[in-house]
Length: 364
Ligand SMILES: Cc1ncc(COP(=O)(O)O)c(C=O)c1O
Image (tube, rainbow, N blue to C red; front, side, top):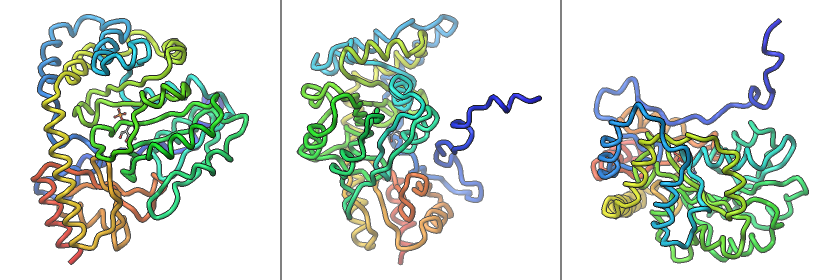
């Protein structure tokens, strides 16, 4: 007799999320990690100090709830979002999982649009959902609004929208959002993932709190892993209607967030100069890389995020390998539903220059 007869098939049959490489074994020089959309400037110094100050309390249990961080978020959002509308958790991914736990039962359906952030699919499958893919369409990878609307059934529980999208880097223009949200049944959760919002330059970008005013079925997802540089800590938050937040709070377990994470996140929110510096570095890196990609005739999409969606003029795995041989880690996108493409994170000046040199060698 073995326990495997009790293993749940929806957990065992499908693969999970594959993170970026942490090292390249054969390469001996300096490695530049441009594979995980991390902050190239480290973490907010105020957050680092908060973590070190919190170490004296390592023997104590943390706050039972996330209220201190929710209050800080309410101030940060200048009270356009109430503290009771937030839910905080150990990463944006965890909030996505919480929403899935709260709304998906076996056999329910969700809608993704490939290429997509992989956990939407894997977490939904683990919850027993059927995943429908309505791919982004055309050369600019735009949302297929009518396709999504006609794919909805009585069993549809979540539509995943990502703006800017990972891995394409494109945002969803406000007009498209309104058109889709007006047509979708209002009892479907629209998970609006905006973790890259700090880097957006487009005028017609819309934040989740603006959408929430007209569409109470929006659940917005945010992370401290990107602009705030706290990916190693695992901390993120979502906001939504008070009613949905009160419900999801029941799904969330107590003592969930380590004190170090709460203190670091509160400090990071107040560190506007670090965020400004980060955004400046990313936007100037974006201009530099765009210019170089154009010179090299390398195809890419215009991006609103801290990474580029690139179509290399050779087999994507070979391109990744050639860059790895030169100390540059980037992300192949086969398991994001975009085979043939790669994603390259915008680095700091040194990393961008190393990338450019490597590209010149590979493509010339
Ligand atoms: C679109 C998108 N959503 C959510 C996340 C989750 O971020 P984290 O779990 O690190 O907070 C990521 C991370 O890469 C992402 O790209």
